[in-house]
Length: 289
Image (tube, rainbow, N blue to C red):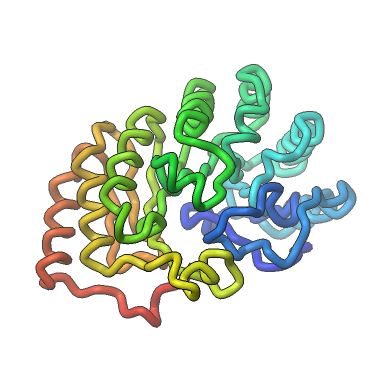
């Protein structure tokens, strides 16, 4: 397979065929993200993609899912994405679903009919980075969309019948805005109605604007108690039912994995143990992005 740079994929795509169809991220301005700072966004040439599909057809017959990398494959024009999904269906007929990252702008640039077309061709899962539901936080981190646009984008995906996984980021608001961030994020998630919520914990990368803000004193990373109370507030305010809830990313200090609202009280009990010091936490040197 032909890969350029570090390939990032969601934890739930660990066993997927990773097909890199774009390089970098079309937005690439989020202050906390250092994944694509060293490259300009572009769509890979069709010849390279089709060679990778031929490789997968020969050597990847045990994998049942495909993930389209890099940062936001939905930035591809509709016609090119339709052609790609048809090629996957033709060359890898055993694949049961395709997943990709998407931002709110790219989602809203697609009509419901276009998204339905992609779904009918095999797109099954869309991963969307919300990070925060707080308007000021989203503006500060240069996310490129506010809460209302995030909600509309999430609802459009769900109304199409696609599986929507939404990422939120503990600590991104700093200590002073932590609780406001938690409350607003829960409010936006409730309105979006995602199929899955994935919680990550902020880790500041040296090559990011956020690292420079921290160095100059304009951003402070919250302490562990603040992070855990942030997550506790968020969980308490979520009213979703049957939504997968996972805080099992390598960046987290401990793992939560279950469903809302069934496992809410179990999650809160684990958080209370963490707050009291009774829970063993992941050492800093074991955390990763």
